Length: 376
Image (cartoon, rainbow, N blue to C red; front, side, top):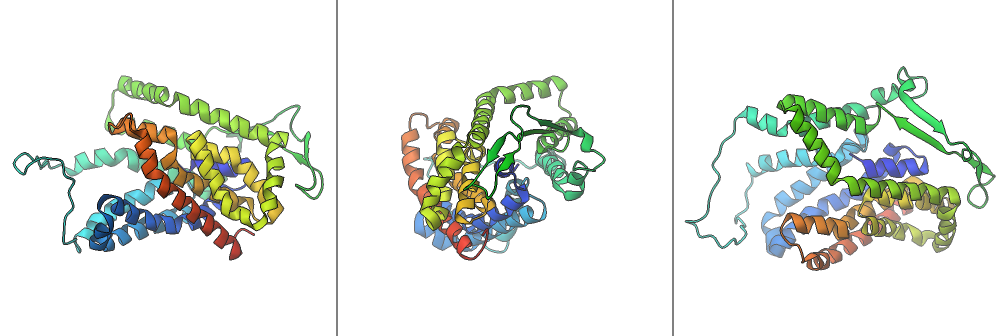
């Protein structure tokens, strides 16, 4: 849902679209590389040699769809539309090209023991199975278009639904001074609650419509909602606390003080900026939390070295994305899902090398973008 980008933009007072546009510039190459790496993990160089046309096709389709969705719609839908389009495109491609060899995992089953699922499904059943994703995509797409967003901006007919609270005792009472800014500037402390225009409302409404479309019993729908909240209770609390700490760090001057120290690295900081996001996800388990934690720091450092905060927050986001594979929380969940409990250390050892390589690549891409004048 683009939440990491949206939160990162909010922390530095930028437009999510501006941050998302820079994110796709850094992800374009990585999106093409990842399918090659996945095949190499399974079948080595031989697998790449035998299947490179479909691998390249997969990476290009995913990366281009992700980029176009971000640029044309916004940061909310790329991670939904890109995989959906790719999943449809790959079978179409394989109708015209097939590898000479078919790789299969060795499960120990003999040909006689192997069970082939020959179940066929009607178009109605397929539509019902895909309906949650279709409905969600439609709702988020509507919530992301500019005419809909304009309804809630200042002067819009639905602006009254947006709750804005200026915190007493804090709003405009903290001053940002040199060398962070040229002249003393009040620091706004405003709480904004979008009852309708928030993407979370779109997701909630999509869930309600899905329940109606699938004709779920109200009791089953409420039980599912309750179970989901229970499952996410710790992540919800953790992200909330990290966001609170992030704003505390910004208002107290902690982020800007650290930024002044990091600014001493000058141009080299553009290389290390993604590593902050990488470290943040390793510590918190969430790209959203990482952006909340380090977004203000990235932007403040950027002002000192002449690089836009949007570019550095984008680097923080992408660095966090490639750090997700080494997050202890992610590894614990993945191990539990596939029956590898107790072998988390092996999984971390396996993914660490790839994660570091990708993080370094993001640092080089960020530095190259700055060298080309992007975000300066």
